Length: 268
Image (cartoon, rainbow, N blue to C red; front, top):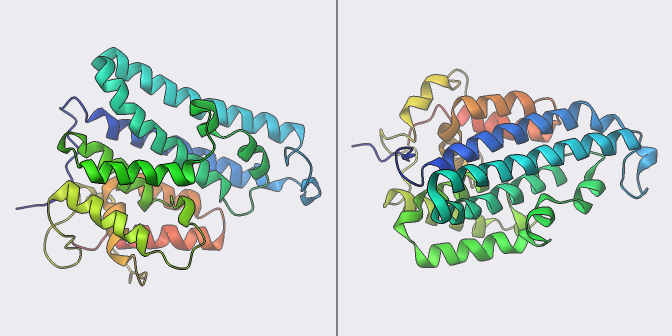
């Protein structure tokens, strides 16, 4: 019997995963744009308020507006289709998505618009706060304490956000065991069992394996090798696209994407 993650699109809450995928595709598109276009701004702009010339500021405003409007549009759709319950449910996922996109842009190597972005966070625009690095994990702690089975899709969104790079207050810390703990607890909540990556025949989203790279020898992380294959298989084509996008950024980012894609061929 497969113990794969199951996105229940036919339930009242399954729309959250569809919205996450839609939004993440848009984020990846703009990360590529920032890498290709915005990073070319002269380093002479460093230290200048806004950290970008007028053309870059205009482009960043377009990106931020599009991401913001996408999140708000999704909230409106949730309200139309599911009323107050669906809106409240989506708002939990919306915070995760906003926090994730802010962090990805702020930590994009070579991106010269970081100061402008930090002054115009999606989090601040949506919620009036500037503390996602801490608040993300406070919310996650509360989620894991309650372990409400109805909110399984929210657990998947948390797990995906951690899988594609959100670290918040733990970013830069040499000890990443707390992040591993969160991933493990979310996995157990979703699947009702301990992670069994590389130990059997089960896979996350077996159907996604038809879209993943299978040739070549996969490289492994020391501490998170069990998770990279899981996260990659969740999206299949989506993460293959992310590999292509991130490949154009820097060597470090390219290496990370390569790990994700190559590990997608492994069994769990």
